[in-house]
Image 1 (cartoon, rainbow, N blue to C red):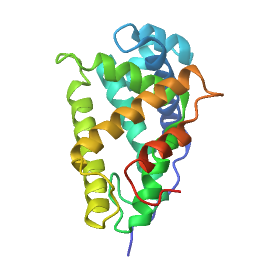
Image 2 (cartoon, one colour):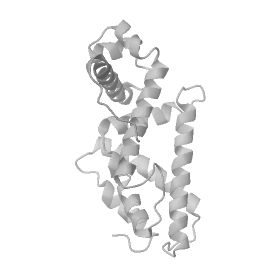
Image 3 (tube, one colour):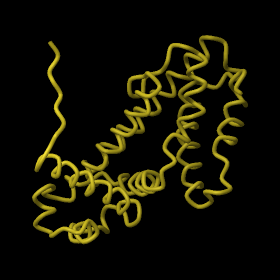
Image 4 (spheres, rainbow, N blue to C red):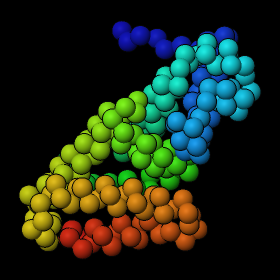
Length: 208
């Protein structure tokens, strides 16, 4: 018999809600100021709790950072699950692969998420940054995912280029990041879907 899942109540629910509020606040703050320029005191003030109260939930800035990255990963996981996929799982159906390539860039058009990513991606290039290994792994996984996707398209005869799938994957990741940053500056005029489709149409057959 499967375990019975009960809804949290009382102090447990309040604790979970406060932790989520803290992480969502940090998500915005990391995007605004970066990790290094933010202090625990700044976070406590923005959330509206004491510094001692914040330390009760997160003992350090590093814990906050990894909590925020976990929150982002959870949101990404929900997107893939909504498509009936595991996280960063390449679909078997060729049409689904094309559809996923077209929607991944616009699935995360959340200002806080993009600001967080663009700021931390730059900061975390330093080997002593606490998120260095996390971001290195993130880019490695993304390139691997897109390499597998473009390789599947190549095996099915859907690529009209002799460029290696790994090279296409690296360019696609760079384009994805760059377009999202441009969107932060021009949210009303940046046409991400159009530009992604134009890029894909240049080497993938029958992209809508």
